Amino acid sequence: MSDDFKKNLDLALGNAKRLSNKILIDGKLISAKSSNKIKVVNPSTGEKIGEAPQCDAHDVDTAVGSAETAFHKWKKIPARERGKMMTAAARKLEDRRDEIETLLALDTGNALRTQAKPETAASIELTHMFAGLAGEIKGENYPPNIPNTIHYTTKDPIGVVCAIIPWNAPLFLTVAKIAPAIVAGNTVVLKTAEQAPFCALLVCEILQQELPPGVLNVISGYGEECGEPLIAHEKVRKVTFTGSFSVGKIIAMKAAPKLCPVTLELGGKNPNIIMSDADLEIAIPGVIDGMRYTRQGQACTAGSRVYIHEKIYDKVLEGAVDKLSKLKMGNALDETSDIGAIISEEQLKRTLYYMDIAKKNSSTEILHGGNQSKGGEYKDGFYYEPTLLSGLPVSSPVCQEEVFGPVACAIPFKSFDEVMKSANDTQFGLSAVLWTKDLSRALQFVDEIEAGFVQVNQCVAPRANVSYGGIKMSGLGKEYAFDSMINHFTQSKTVLINRGKSNIDV
Ligand code: ADP
Image 1 (cartoon, rainbow, N blue to C red):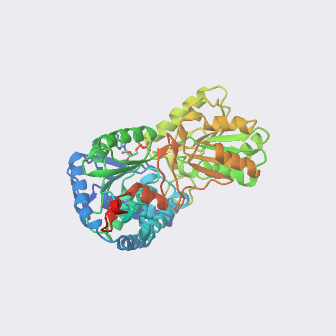
Image 2: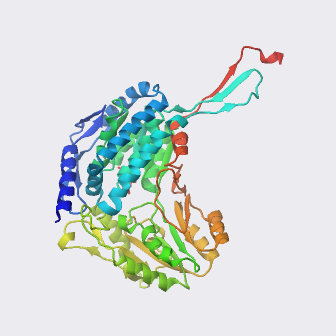
Image 3: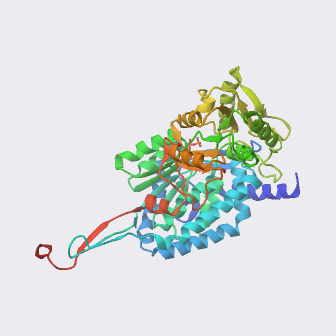
């Protein structure tokens, strides 16, 4: 173990220990009312790194009570003042960047150099962006279309926001939800993911130091026991969620009886399409980047259906396999690792389940990977080789369902019409990528593809000021840009004020 690796690990373990068994209520780290605990494990080694409180409806009530009390004062603070506080909070994140990125790698198993550091940088930038947009929260002034009447709309905070996040990008998704909600004048109760609770808690602890107590509260626990009472709580007036489609559907139903608005960022089975005229210098690395192999494929935007024109099929796959063979998998806190560990044993089993289906199909060709990595440095951690498959029928569950692991399927095609039909033949509509030098083809793709996040000749990850979200079964609403703050975290009044003259005379 190198000196840097040991230093990173010690820093992260120290924070995990300090935050173990804590929730954030009313500006303070405290113990939960529930005495039950969730064991938290380092995905890279399988070792226990701490415990998270298994909060229940009592803890939900305390957290919502804190947020509700804080809301009545917070909403009256001018938006620019709220923004300044958020800027000061974002600066604190910068100051403690090392702590955040190492804890993120420990919590998630996502490699420090390729994932945790960029996610931390992107999260700080996003927090700054929303802080700076505070002064843009404003309604509209209407022309005098009703005689003697001043007519305008407001953009007001909604109230207590419930934010529920998953484990795959817990830092970026935390700030993507809480920064716009808080700057817009709401208060928040965040429920972290049971598999990776510590980094989100650390970041909220830091942010909360620059905010009035109770504006940001954090609890941990399981979906049914903690998430559902939080959504259903009568004082919660907005729900924002990122996670699986199956849970998103439950969340929408739980929020429905009180007509509580919901924002949902759900899954995808995203097409990455390489036309025969594509520039392969960028398209081949695009297969690897697009699949998010360096995040073990655990990304909603992973381009896991790799459609390749038959004329260049072998060449692209040869290039992709060559690139895959150069990626180093290992402990997330070791900066020489390109790829880290899968989040949990349960998620590893999910990859094994889909690979079992693939291996049982006689037409499957495993071009790269295809095995769980065991023994040696992988002993007790949750590792699976980055895997590229060919030959599976498109109807196979491996090509249709979200594996959320490091498994991509290559699929040959003959024509644009054929590939578009297949690419759109899914319940999901999150992200889609096309590689071509033909501009009119690219524009036709943009017109016809059923996806909310569409890219041509690149496959960058979502980031600040890129409006991101899915259509079809991939979600409701867009995040990460200014419109998300207005659309998801404010409500509007239409105001008509008579100037003191009767309209009847006009
Ligand atoms: P993943 O498959 O990525 O773990 P999930 O959708 O299962 O994603 O979980 C994402 C988040 O949703 C986690 O914080 C989890 O605890 C929460 N969750 C799971 N089930 C429910 C539920 N029934 N109600 C509210 N939250 C839930």
